[in-house]
Image (cartoon, rainbow, N blue to C red; front, top):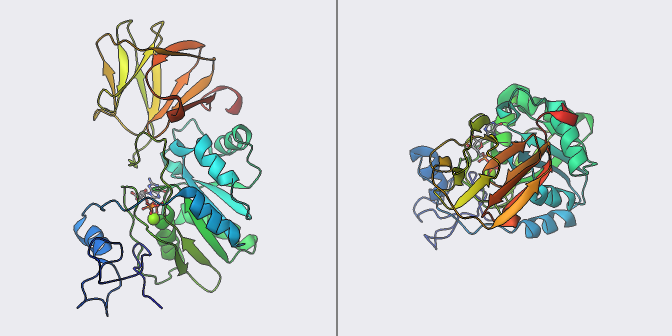
Length: 324
Ligand SMILES: Nc1nc2c(ncn2[C@@H]2O[C@H](COP(=O)(O)OP(=O)(O)OP(=O)(O)O)[C@@H](O)[C@H]2O)c(=O)[nH]1
Ligand SMILES: [Mg+2]
């Protein structure tokens, strides 16, 4: 059987330098990690992007296998595309909303669970995992043990924290595994990887899905902030270095929830811009811009924008109102 890289799950090989799992021929006998993972983990080098795995292909494979699935998602990536993927998993499953510690204080874990259940019709159990180490992974571990689950897939979009989850749980259980490679850039894990943590639990890490309609696949693991902008008539918000614009017709203030700030991903733009698409957002609804953040509208508002409609969705607001 081929040896695999414990960092990314790719089979180790010495024939193709540009393919995944490469290790020079003189090192392969003793290698634990491929060259890419070794360099990422020791020198902080950024992962070169490998072909992203097709989400539907991964789910097809998992659906054929009757194992339990833990599906991880971080708060800003809860959206229709990702929840549809979750719903398409036929196996017994658990939704874990990860990075809960980054949420604004006014969103409690119970609120978030009820909200996701209602808006996306989720019948499977949902847990919110707050942060790394003890208080995060321990409660999921306890849940699995109570439910008598001893082997589970970890699925989810890239950067949702699947591999970090395994490393953190290994620390809590004091299990001596080789550390899995984790990174803030997308596409770190490249293949399925079985990791036996103890006699009670084996986790199967997986390559993350890439959301085709996301405007940005990197993450920042900073707290989600509230950015408030007072908009004048001739001003708008620009996204991704002036690629997209959003203009509020009646000069209403804009509240953006995001973990990005300035650095040209989100910024106020002080010039008049012609925008052709116009949408009306009902009172107490959120505009969710995939990969960027959420704008909350307290009152009914008409906005102009040039973001393609498959890059955003509008849904009842989680901020204030019913779910508080
Ligand atoms: N703040 C915070 N950051 C986290 C948490 N879990 C993971 N991260 C960070 O999220 C980023 C992605 O983590 P990974 O574990 O590599 O994510 P992944 O889902 O395995 O990603 P792929 O292998 O690309 O599919 C890293 O920068 C982690 O440090 C968490 O609970 N809280
Ligand atoms: Mg990973």
